[in-house]
Length: 80
Image 1: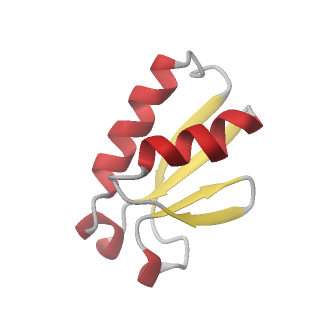
Image 2: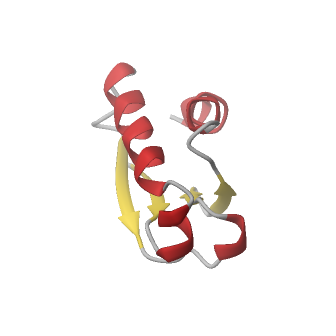
């Protein structure tokens, strides 16, 4: 199972981490990936100035609530 991590630390929270999490949850259900991707809320991925930080397969990305769907389709779907 692959782990998709979304930071919920202070900087990421302010920039909309919970909206990103909600979008990812919807996408996981939409594509029926709940058995292949584990969505986790974490504290600090070390990229606070680039919030919202999202970790996936050893890389950290900057994702906004506005581009979360596109990010999921381009970065997550091809790898699962």
